[in-house]
Image (cartoon, rainbow, N blue to C red):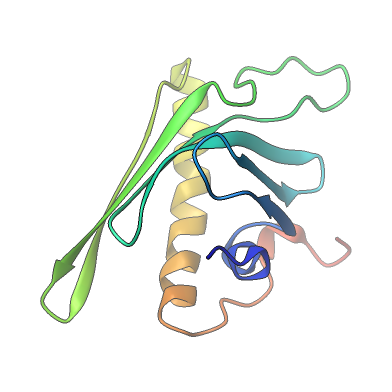
Amino acid sequence: MVEEDKAARWMGQAAELDARPGGLFRVHVLPGHTARGEFVELDPPRRLVYTWGWEPDGDAPNAVPPGSTTIEIELEPAGAATRVRFSHRDLPSAEATRSHTEGWDHYLPRLVTAAQGTDPGRDPWLGAGA
């Protein structure tokens, strides 16, 4: 079972998730930045694969269209902990790779905090007014 409010706690303001192959993956990450794709593979609690890209924002060119890249997450027991293998592939350019690396470097530690049962708090990237 996927709980949209829990998913949005570590990344995003809101999430719409239909966690089944072909189901919608949509997360309102920041104002004007909504990620969209679809679930490809779900093998709880070991593996999750979904597509990713950004919905258009006005007239700005969209270098990473919805569903054009793939995120793969694998979970493996590691003693009392869990090893997470995360990959984001098919990014179209070095700039897109750099930008997404910066984003994942920000959000993955928030996921760790949430997975440990602690509230990661308000996303500092939202700023005071968002």
